[in-house]
Amino acid sequence: MKAERMRAVSIVSHGGVEQLEVREVERPVATGDRVRVRVHAAGLNRADILQRRGHYPAPPGVPPDIPGLEFAGEVEQMGDEVLTWQKGQRVFGITAGAAQAEYVVVPENCLAEIPPNLSWTEAAAVPEVFITAHDALFTQAGLEMGERVLVHAAGSGVGTAAIQLARAAGATVYGTARTAGKVERAHPLGLDEAVVVNGEAEAFADAVRDWTNGAGVHVVLDTVGASYLAANLQALASRGRLVFVGTLGGARGELDFSMVMRRRLTLIGTVLRSRSNEEKANAVRRFKTHVVPLLMRGAVRPIVDRVYRMEEIRAAHEHLELNASFGKIVLRAS
Image (cartoon, rainbow, N blue to C red; front, side, top):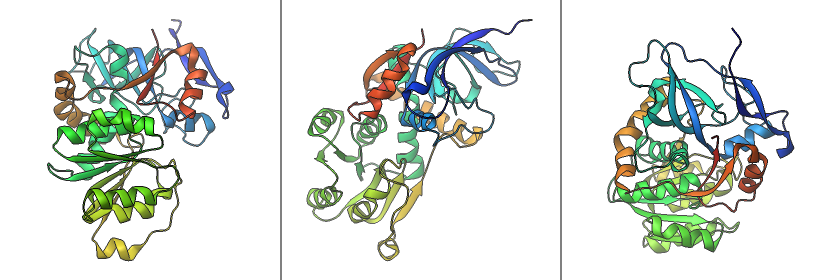
């Protein structure tokens, strides 16, 4: 029997956007506890740019040339061990790759049902950033009601999700961004205070000191990395927690151990893509329990910057690389 085919974004070779094409490839088949989803829309992430450049390869067992970590679509095929889903259900979820295609196959426990108030485009802008933000803030850092949190890159996908989730949990939310425009757009999402940081990390450490009367914040959600390390430590309160979820500003920095020890700080590193299926399933389960109800009520919402057709993948990458987007960039697969 001839294998079924589908369209998929393909990384032809590592390099610039010219290495991206939409090609016809073999359609994956769902077996065991796997579900095949007919993808209607998929989110674009900086991980996809890194993968295209050759700096973030897909884990073993994942197609190395088809990017995509999140998607929204309909259940189309189920393995014989699947117990949870039925054909035609609207679902969104995370995967270690290959979501930027007309079909994707994932474990059934990495899916959640899409609330009826979300469109395909909106739903595709949710999984990676809301699961990352929720896991980092609450599972990893243990953010509690009444605590203070600093969210870097407030206009990013993770940033816009984290601001909303922290506010919904009763935290005081501070933020940073590289432009005044992004700060202005992020305020209605739940920021109490924010500062523009243009290469001067000390600016936010000083601002946090002013906002908190010198007490500092309990949690810092850091998408930047090395260039913010010293200022992050200065911004933390005693027993504060610093969570690393990105390294846009470098992956190596100088650490003041004495400050960490003296103030009993906790440094936490986290990433979704390379986790085991069981760990991802646990993160998705908590997302379904705590975040999906908020989405249903409109208490939090996905922020979509631009939508591109799959065939416009090069333009989508170019736009994300400009660092001008606010929220998520989404690809339509249908």
